[in-house]
Image (cartoon, rainbow, N blue to C red; front, top):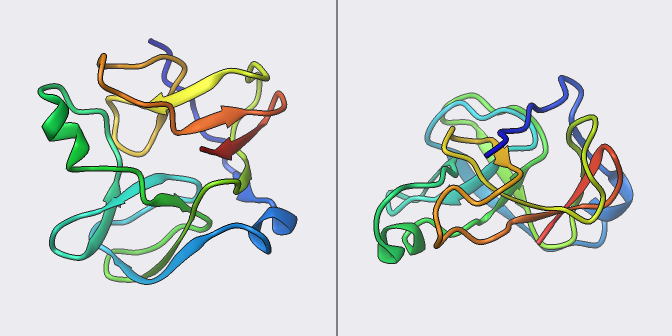
Length: 132
């Protein structure tokens, strides 16, 4: 399992941001970096998505809500960008590869950590991903 590092200048593609679904009006339950996969907790706050070991039910409780566009302080407002959002993510990616939640919160993995993990992003260029 390869955990991918995020570019320090990771960002949302402005063109895709105009055309994709998003969720606004949310608040961060923890400090969030830019281009981080997130879920909405039962407390209504946004947290970094992480692959969890255990049952399918445990993972189903944390479905991907979207990716952040910017860094956000704890308690700050968050907008999550969903299916089709394109991000500059990392260097040296393999186009056509699927990416999964990593065992490290907020990061992506080149392979599924657990058998019940679903792909959450598609690599489209050596540096860009699209949210699935």
